[in-house]
Length: 427
Image 1 (cartoon, rainbow, N blue to C red):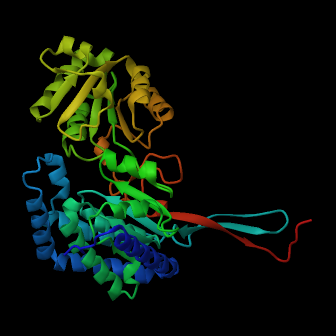
Image 2 (tube, rainbow, N blue to C red; image 1 turned 45 degrees about the vertical axis):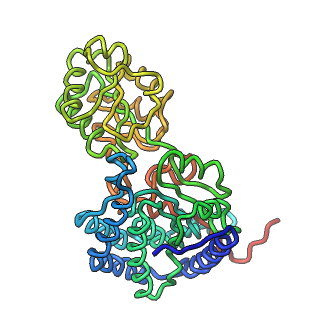
Image 3 (cartoon, one colour; image 1 turned 90 degrees about the horizontal axis):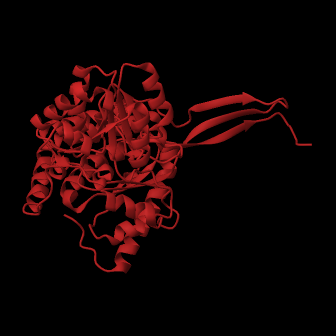
């Protein structure tokens, strides 16, 4: 059950205690052995599978609590747990355990003329705060990734997935205990009061080193505007696909439908399709027809409507809208230059794809577009840490700091310098 906590003083006291406990756990995790961390991860996976019935029951209660709220199907999809998704959650924990431990890895080493030997070495970030909505699986993903990188984590899930997240968190704590690691290494805030989010954004008196938000635009905007600690995040996933005149049509058909319709509610779903004017006569009607057959509403620019009457006219607002639904906007552009101009104007710098066989087009797309993830002849739905071979991700960042794109184990570390001398002094 969720704790009944009322009053600013009670929430402040609770959050201060959570911060202190996390900081203490982070010190222990920073020197924890790879064997202990992996043992905890495997035990967590086993606990999740053993508690499958409890997880499904908790999730069913969460789903019942949102009945009648008029939520989008994509939101309900993210909230729903199934036998398959729980198996996948456990498998993800095992995959993270198999990853190389980044802590202590020597990233670079060099010698100076004065004999000093310098090493740059990976270290944990410390305490990570994760604020997320509707996705109960983030509880396991975030907890596991932070643990593998030697970090303590404070989790604040959404109210809609509170019971599911609590059930998953209990399994994570069971794994920590079985491996002899501090149970406060992974903490879930036991209240849905929004004041707890404000406390996290304040940094909990220096306890939190980084915050990662996962959720809708309003949540991410609040975190970015109010956080007093660094943030790894993307505000929205306004992803584009450009189909060049040199594209293979059969390939383009498969990729475009998959990028939009595989899962419309994920941040890597395509929201805008750009088609080379030089190829419009041969590919436009086919691509639009395939999207409509798949159940997608197509909104077209004026030149698209002139070739395919009956579509919904696209407005200026459409080019900057993340639909997260079965809707896509389509525009004709003047080759790769037009695609680059459009993406540069409207992109959220998350993920963009080019479908082309001309290497010069691909080279310009990769060199001139400044987004965190760029794909050639592949679906934007591959914008995912698991698909990158990271075993999972805590989120996707579009910032320019060291964590850009999928934020996995390595991105949850910083580094320090170790300098070895033989008695050198500086003249």
